[in-house]
Length: 93
Image (cartoon, rainbow, N blue to C red; front, side, top):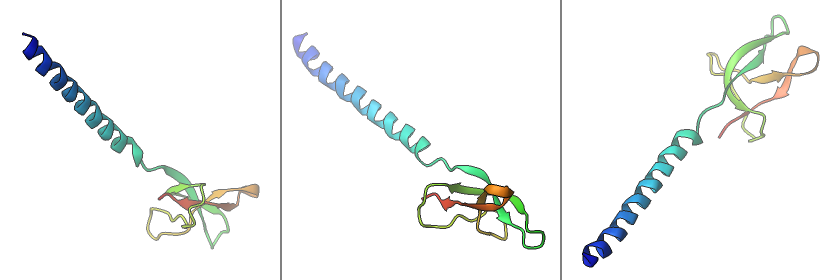
């Protein structure tokens, strides 16, 4: 009985630890790269106003310009002062 107990407890601990590690990896992968889809704006050259578009962007400077998802792709901005498209957005890496 003692021998069975000495073998079963470490094996059970190993199985539980492995299952917990696997679950942690799956949860981290599921939430790590969820894209941030926001409503951004592009400059409309004919009217000078901002047009709403969809973009995967951030205000954190990654030194890569953010482009709209719709075709044709254009540089995306947020509205700033005077309701103009002036606040730079950056691509999420």
